[in-house]
Image (tube, rainbow, N blue to C red; front, side, top):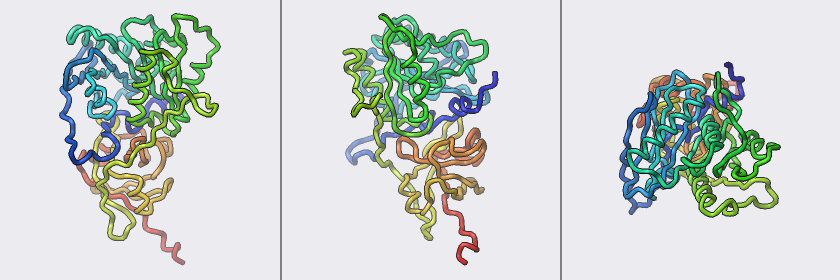
Length: 386
């Protein structure tokens, strides 16, 4: 099956929190030490690789099971869990187990992904003991996977939250599909351009008598597919927990006649290693992290660094990395450029994402965490001064 361009873009373009391990916004207080790394158990079930992060203290019998989004066939088959992400770290510190699976293969996968997630849940129950509560979380294609799982009879899972779900993608010979009838609390979280599909799910003209549960939708007032920050992820998990424990009335309500609750949380400025160039037209900074699946890069730079260097939004600048120069747009999202072009933008957590759309930015430039890169305005054309 050939996906049309809008669906392919939504599936194949992860945003900065997709596969990038983000730290909490803002520097740590001087007296606060970084948390100890989580113990992560890894293994394989029927060809699907899994990772299970253990809480630093006693397990509270709760589990967060994460379904990742679309990955091209060429991507490595890995279970990239990132327990250091702020939302995951908060749950681990509270005693949760946080786990994910690679699925048994990449590509547009739904039915087998459901089986792999079910198998991982069964493995957790057998290895660690039966959980009291298992929450499903998924983004993009993983949101479709989780939504279908939420439509089955209640039992193994107690709730689900999905971020910018790509609900109407279909894999070849698809064996399962949407019924629009969830049996457990199902919370959609959607950015501005991604709200159409979950809104159509909520407002579908279908009867939803008990035991079907009416789903809910939170809006993130921000552009960009899955451009949802760590604080917003954690707030969604908290809201879902309140819903499970106290019913739908525990959910925060829209304000000012808005149809959906605005769950946007502005990021706080984070750390920066930017060193201004002597001419004030650029700066050097370091690579904080590299996405092992997509090759996207996270830079230790803030929007204020671009502003100080005179690099305005939606203009091109020169990126020097790995001994080569790349024409890069200082944009807003991945979709601001065409396939193969470079783009940098401030992500939902306030840090700078660098990508070569539909390509491997880190591989192209030979970048690794800790490497230095240079960003600068292009020299004005001589005719500009005449």
